[in-house]
Image (cartoon, rainbow, N blue to C red):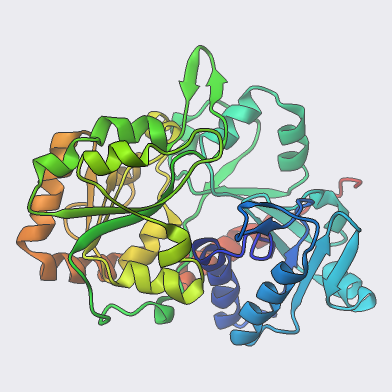
Length: 384
């Protein structure tokens, strides 16, 4: 499978991709990790991209070694076209003999380069944006997505809510390695989340603008004043094309912390989620408008940790049980009511949260279904 563990050596992203590896391994598959994004490595110290990949490669090696996968990874440093991990011959053998290649988040720069006899699987973790770009006939997206044999999406309602794209979208969810999350860990008193103010540019489609979390958060700015009995905290990254208004957030009653301090690595991220009373979060504006049924991989981790999740509805209320453990809201009044509901009976909601994770996000169930569906699709032998 592919991902961005080395590219972005951050706790939340690492868990996102790592749980695919752990889940596949636990099902008995011989699993390897491939990273060939074409991007220059991100430097958490400076917040920019650099020409030295050695810290990123060391992070990847250390992380996978910790979970018994230290000899099963491949990473290409795009600037020098240099490979790390498996030796060249072994890398070619592995990629040439693999039954499935899961391109999670579409991270491969040139997926067709790794075709061989493999069934290429596209896993869309950013629905609405993906489908709108395809509907706009953006050539790069059509080529990249079209290189794959089978297509999955976190937007479980995409076929009924998004414009036609020419691709058959099958539903999937974030797989969670349940044994890695500890519901019995002590929790604190704050509702928390980890978020970017903005991640990338908005998308225009048929006269509508589909934006980022900043658009939605503005609607809930005064939420702390409506639930003064609750502490609302956000581990907030600054934003890539618009800076987060930290002073205004603090003045409105939000507690704002630096994610680089509280959840920078794998263990710190898990501790931060487990130390929460519950999660509260908005979604990206495009997810809210699109109502695709997208559900956050971060929120799935909160559930696995036995922490209730109070999040803005993106259509997931049609595919996941809501009301206990997982509470959906559409406006500020609904958000305040959901917070009060969790406050009133936290033990019941913690139990329900873990039960939802076990029923709907267990990596054994999620990945077994994905593999069975992908294996049933006969690869088309497109030329690279």
